[in-house]
Image (cartoon, rainbow, N blue to C red):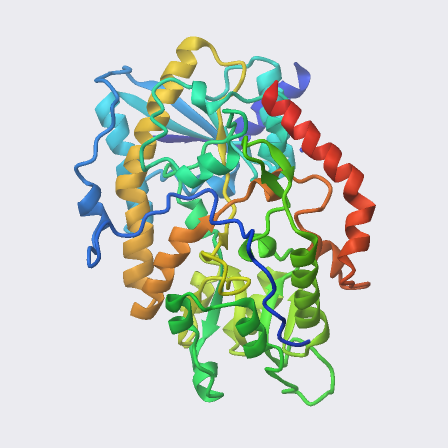
Length: 490
């Protein structure tokens, strides 16, 4: 395995240029959408089975024998995303070494050289480079990964191929995200690859970290039993946190030195999906339509507004990676909305006893928890030759199988269950893994309808008037859905 230097990749990109607050009522959830989205959603195969790697060791694909005589399989990604599926060498870290072992197994079995091509760019420039490379028919990669929103939106412009048409992919296998395929398939077309080739979807799952020391000190019952019973709801989360506040520095101001019940990043990623709302739904023919009920949407918006904008105990932050993390690691935050992997390193360096739970349901009538996540989906370029597609499909299938057998168990079981969290949180991780989703609405939205909480509850002029918000975007939203439908049909 080898990794192209950033300098080489940037030179390549340059050449391309020459040739992107009160607890709330529970409401009606009769049309709540069930879990969807982009992660392989299996817990251990049987109750009490604790070693996924052993359980999956004997799995095989339907790929024929082959030897590619050292042919390079190049995947194009930006630096941050590469670490989720590529390791240049072993270093003793469990997940890194599992990635190295998985890729080495593919290389040795099929005589291939897996090469990570680092674009060295940010998300917008990266996807722009992917499109330029495809447009110029330049043979720069077999597959490319990209930002969770920018890549799907670029798929509507004809740059990527339908993964159902790629040879060697057995999309019925468990190393492919079955919920993801269901979510992102329209008219028998899906442009995005989601599955076990990468563990980003679990690492980036948005969940709630809990400071168990604060809960004990203030005699707050931890919600683990509610989660297991299916009774962990938005109403209970609001009730536990809205009044949990102390002015620790005594200056009569809400600031970073005080004690809070809940903090969330300003983007409020996935809040609608958590509560069973997808702004783009599907009809009986699996075609797209406006997917939400105005009454339920209004109730959720009102509830979250009262909670985050009018209570002292809960709030949004405009720099989650700094302010919110500092609050939690300093022991001044009861609960925080983070990505699963985003807080691990920082919190492990503290003496805080901590656990985690999924984001709650809207109400108890909601059938499943929904854990929002993001990941870098991969694509097959529309300019690929038949030989290139045959090779790319073959190696992607092989890497996905090995990721399912080696990488995912290492992260899920060894790194998470045995290294970072206690037994109670192990049960929570199982639920989070089973309910993780990346939603069609979120990644294809271009008019702001999938993030109304973010847009309406800005730091200067927050509002809970969803009817007005929707009216200003209704025509744009409907045109956007029509444009997406046209792309999938064409």
